[in-house]
Length: 118
Image (cartoon, rainbow, N blue to C red; front, side, top):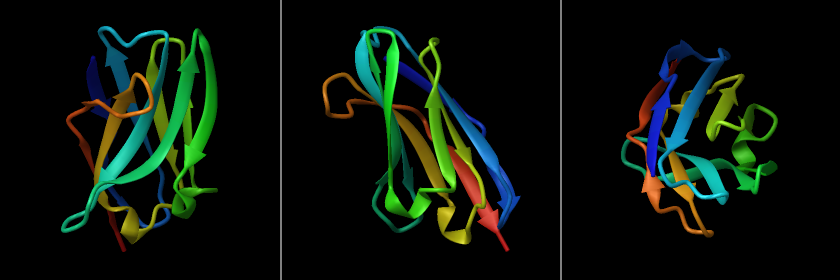
């Protein structure tokens, strides 16, 4: 499985960004795609995820601190999006998309930097 993320950038607090990640290769028909992030000096943390189950999309799940601001979505081309609104300084991180064929995330994209400034 290959994951290609894009859409990061530098914005001001309160602005929006939309991340995209395309999953290709042997993704399977039932899997999850998720977004994680890692801020400088911190461990990587879960942000949001959705599930594909034989052509249908289920979920989503969110980290509490992004609920109401971030929206994860997906399409039939195995692309997952993360719409990020009302960005805060603490959202600054490298954002990674990941693929979980059976509950555990095994494949990771290269990461895309999101920088939020005041």
